[in-house]
Length: 210
Image (tube, rainbow, N blue to C red; front, side):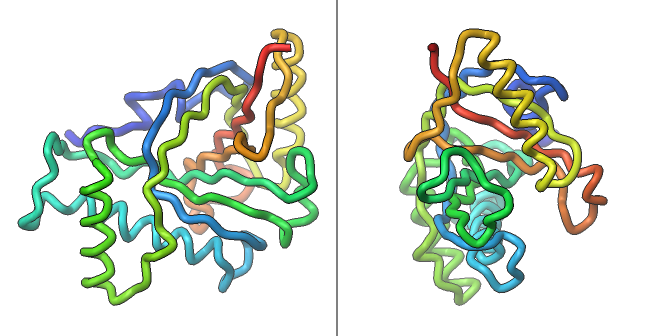
C-alpha cells in the first residue's frame, strides 16, 4: 500500500474544523513562484500547477525507469499547496486577486535529494519538451502556526481566518505574517470536480508568542 502523507501526518493535512496550534518542521518542496489572479485560465498560477505535477510524477514514476533514488518507497503524491501574499498588504485582501503573489508547492518525500530533483527537471524537460526553468527545489521551515480546516469557497476564508486569529490571541500568540512567513493554503479537494461549498482547504498562518 502506498505511503500517504495526508494519512500519516494528519496533524499537518487533516486538522479539525476549529483552530489548532501546530509546529511545522522543515520540509522540501517542488516550488514555482508567480503572480496574478489564480482564476485566470492563462495566468501564471494555472501554469505553475502543470509544472509542479509534471516534476512530482516524474519523481514518483522514476521506479519504472533506469534512474534509481536511494531510499525510494511508493507513495501518493502529496496535495497541492500555496504560499500567498500581496505587496503592501498585511494579510490577504481577497478582493484584489490581480495583486496576488504566490509560491505554488508540492511536498517532496524526504528521500528526494537536490540531485534527484535536478534529474527529474532534466528528464521532464526532455520528455515533455517544456521549459521547467521556473521550477525550484525549496526547503522551508514554517515553524509555529495556527491552522484550521476551511470548508467552502476560497472567497469565504476570511471568516475562518478570523476564528484562527481570535484563537491564537487567546492562546497568547500574535499573527506573524512577514515577507518570509506567509498565508498558507493546502488544497485537499480538486476544484474542477468538487462543488465550491464543499471544498476542503487547510488554512495556516504563522504565529509567535506575544
